[in-house]
Image (cartoon, rainbow, N blue to C red; front, side, top):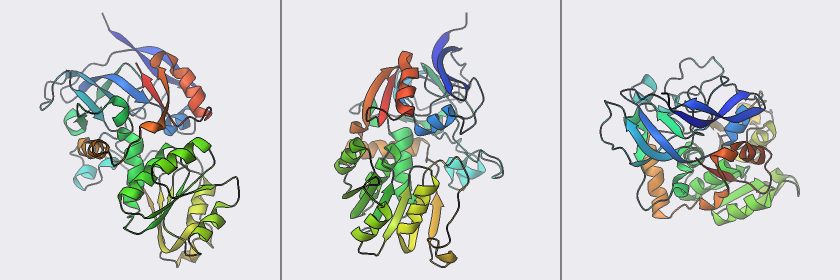
Length: 358
């Protein structure tokens, strides 16, 4: 008899529902994880709204914490019953992209298609983790054991938003003494601010309007918060920097307005580090782009994955240098995931992240 599990399934734009699917079979290089905690990402909301296309019938979710239920016959170095996480990005470890050091783009193929998303498989090209069980491909490249001293919620941000947010600061090459602006203090932006602080930024300016986000931003070391509803954030940032502009501006929302604002606040020679997922074409305005003569840099980043990245992030958590537990504002059992989506998609009740427990 086929064993079944509950899973959050994409039915059509506007509908992700809790349904049933067979528990996956385990191939030689795979591992089956019993999911103990997961969450909903802003990218999942893009999928829900039809702004990012996935196949109908796909299980959504890409941020798993769990326990190894079964190992593939060729997998070594792990044991069943072990607590693990896997990154949202699951590189094979042996592709051209991996071997040139660009693990996130593993499997991307041509850049001319709509999905140059490389190693993002969970909830994108294969079934994801908003379910009772998750099949992890290339397990030896992707499973990272969770230290006994860390709880599920302490490591819940590592698979995606912590990795993505910190990479915004890393790609922007934040340096000691830098001034950094972060546009949009959702979960990704908050992690980007924390990453900028880790890398040596001494002045961090966060832009948002939600009181709960601004409060968490201050707790993570953001020096100045700018409420964009209280006035032009570009003017506020230029005033805070005495007209100099910022060294690095991190875009963490994915809109034309925030992208353009990032350009406007950069000093000559500064870097725009873009993390947002955009759902329409972007336009680069002539003035802020300095007509192409300002030595500006625009860089984009897809969440780094793989077990070594996950190990490093959990080391940061274990060290106490970043504590992201305050970002989990709501908790739901898997049976109520449709309710959780409604809350998260509409950003009600001061929600930052929800913990989903099968």
